Length: 235
Ligand code: IPE
Ligand code: IPE
Ligand code: MG
Image (tube, rainbow, N blue to C red; front, top):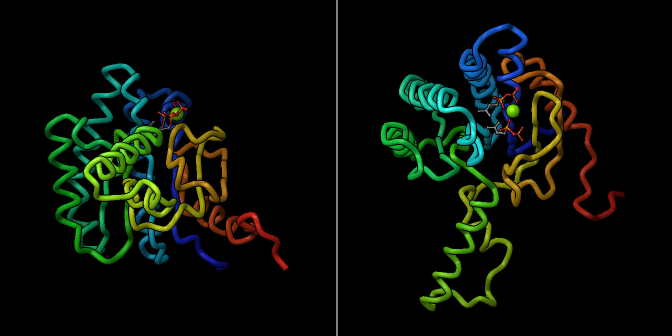
């Protein structure tokens, strides 16, 4: 295989359309989506990818019907309580990107627990974006820096790109190298706005519940064929 991306980000989209195509309730589409996710996490870990960031629930997804939001919250809880042992065994280090405090009690506790339990793990860095918005993340970072400046702990003139990055949920992680959005939609929907500055984008048509290892390998191969210049000129 060609060079692997260090950091892969995935916008797991298309669960609703998958459910519709199979004449099933949307909740079943999300459930099927969780199954797809398991295989991709395992493969990322086995391949030795450094970081995997998955968009699971955006700050805008609260706009969906109460039934769908409830189904998603139920699945989240089920996922974190059911998978944590295996993830921990696989040495996966979980980080939640997003506002955990804005989550319902049980979910919030499960998210904090998952992070605490896998904190010292040195394998795949698995970031799950929940109640996440890229703009909200930047506002939060701006507030943190403004507070430090007001308290005299940082000189505004010393704020660099790296300093700002260190206030994001992804602090300490490399920038996103490869962004995959399934289901053919071609937009970021407020995901990792700062971190995707030089990411390579792929928009496979496959709906997320159908996204399997073959699709993942095809995406990684396509990434390996991209020529990245970062504004410079390759020889
Ligand atoms: C993505 O699937 C999962 C979440 C947003 C939680 P969608 O539910 O957005 O699927 P489509 O876009 O309706 O097909
Ligand atoms: C983005 O998908 C969020 C997740 C996959 C969790 P959406 O389906 O919510 O995005 P839009 O509304 O189509 O932009
Ligand atoms: Mg969608």
